[in-house]
Length: 219
Image (tube, rainbow, N blue to C red):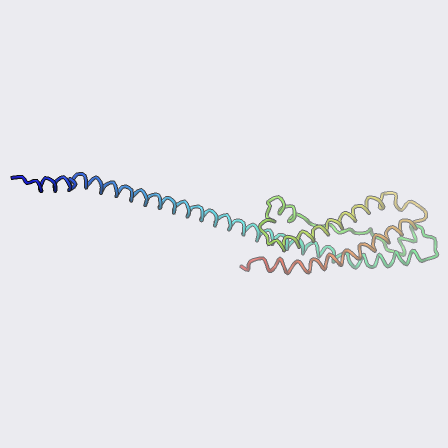
């Protein structure tokens, strides 16, 4: 006969179908958690790979920018060095001309000074313009970016000095006057400034070029 104890035990024990449903439910939650974790890891690795790719592009752009600056600064330095002897000699000759008691005519001036123009320096600035256009300055070391900006600011100031002098003093009718004392005085004053700024720029180039060279990765 079916005992009372057996009936109670049957009520307390879960049916096989109920146990299977609970096991299946637990398994589904575990699988869901694993899938979420895998998706999270995949997203993280994707972001990490994208960040690595962007960092590599930034480094390549920064390296290329530094190479452009190195080449351009060397070109500008050579341009100044090419005219330095002439500017020094011209300043000396103009100073001596202003001390003479002879008539200060155009003929005397050209004979005494051997004047062939003031030969202004034409600075290259393509690398600078490109760095601004591509915003590659933000990828350079801040201290180096500041040093480069400082040099180009000095270059621009010197270029402005040259352009202003050429426009204000050396007009087509400059040498038409019988007395060129005023012109010689203006050239002399201009060259005093030029012969100060050109050596200073060369010194700045000499300081900056090793910094750029050190920041460029060795291939």
